[in-house]
Length: 337
Image (cartoon, rainbow, N blue to C red; front, top):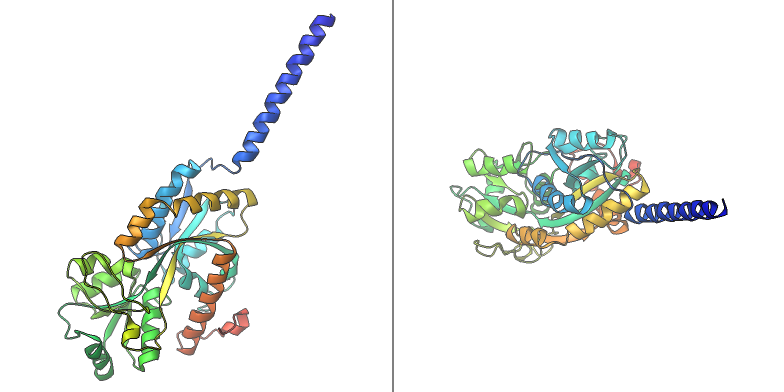
């Protein structure tokens, strides 16, 4: 009896030790998805948000050991899909793929009145500047003819939609140069670029990521990059900085990546952040950014929150001052920079 009791005690201790070790292993592993993650891109396929979301998701899948399904849901300048991502259960299984300026101004535009940019945790993977480009058949050949065209006639400018990067770029250009233009919004960056390539519109000021391929193919002509330094894209002649024509012109570029509600469980947020940081620094993401004339970054947490606050202030007030929106940013606690 005594020998049997000793054996039982030993087996019990071994079992307890095994369970304790297993618990430690699970705790160390943290949150591990047990179903498909849905990544909603609230724009059409082929734009900067879509391209960034897909390259980042592809590199995060093996790290999370989970499938990430990218779903395009355009509408209302991206607000429709963004709201769908926010309204889903906040369990870490529904993300959005978008840009800082868009998400930061949805509330100012009254597109998501109850959802603030502060409700999101952003994970930025790529920064891309806006490039002023024209249809090759356009008489606009350089900066002087660009400004002259806007001052002497109505110029049709395509964008991904109201409040999107290309629209903000056009509004900045109009405010700085002192001109007006004919805004033609589309359901995403790619459709806006295609419209200019086809001659439906004459000018597009979308992102380098979205115009790089068309510039390489000679289907668009670059006039200037909206930055303080020239832009180099493989297979394309160096694009002059807009500050070489107007020294005081502000840089216009945007951060692209993932947006996930801050209200998700802490263990899920920790696991996602870890996987994102590794994925954003892979060679695939770096090579993709270089090909598209963009800069790879890996920003999340407080640094991303700061970028979002700056975007809300800079672009929210720009849109309000231009009359694009009637919501006073100060009523949302957004101060002028």
